[in-house]
Length: 425
Figure 1 (spheres, rainbow, N blue to C red):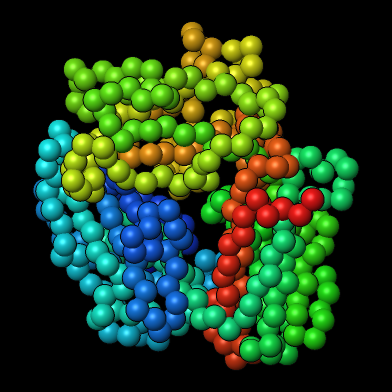
Figure 2 (tube, one colour; figure 1 turned 180 degrees about the horizontal axis):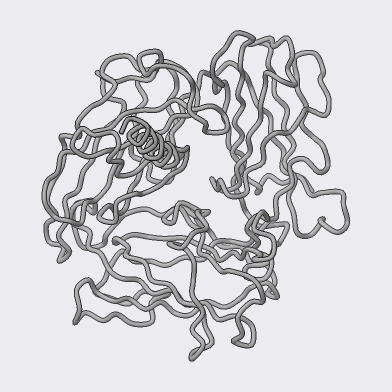
């Protein structure tokens, strides 16, 4: 019996470890609208300064509609989101697990749910090392019953970053891509071997599906590392994000075609989207994939906001499916993941792609991307759905990590965000 028990234990351990990798993921179908952001700013990365009084807000809904016993813990991770080989007592001051005690039943909303929220970190559970962290929320005190995970960051500002957004020199990319040029002053940490001890990570619009990492400095000038290789930090420019205003279900806003109020949750049908790759660039203010929960008719949208099944439609050129490609919606509300939950299905009868999401009242931004079935390792591509236009407004967030010679994890020593409106032409 012992070998069988050992095999089963190893099997389930692998499942748990696979679940707990460093991603924003929801593992229970009753959990919706998970948000983790800096206090009072729904459109912000959850970043804490080490040793400060900074706070993050956690919000999520349980659509089962009755109170449950949820707890949370923090997992310290390396730059690549692999778990560190440290005890939680090495990077958490206080309790390693805490219960979520602030919750409220929905009111006014026709959809019944329990809204949970918290200000993190609690005084009795504080991260004491800088780096990448994974917030794990689980049920009934059992860490194996993971409800969801969310990334956040603790930074110990010991380096300074300079960022420029440039057009590439390559004529074939000049009109379709943006190049990020970074300089990092590491005088405070004074690394002995900066090529190995310092790591750079760059995000475009907070997306992790096209992250740039594992790049080496092109030049080292004293304490300044220059990352300015022509091919190192290139990003397709994309286009401004599409949007839909769902702050009210009583009235059809500009992007809403119709609302069926005879069913619960309501069914909201959006106006069809078409490809924009052949359309000239036009600037309009967007939120680069973020969404925020808000209503026009209630006091507190977090527990008074309602839910609706929102139907997205994309019309491909000539109403024909893309050859050997899958189509996805990318946005913060899909965690920018390219999986079955964000994949659109082609309707042969209508000649369109379709997908429905259960969404809470708020304002949402999104875009369409494709992947190549013949090469699953390629990154998401917007060229045939949105177009790549060099003057698109994008946010670029740069993370700098450092590991000392005897260190056991990657410390986060600097973080900054630059906008391509400052693109140097």
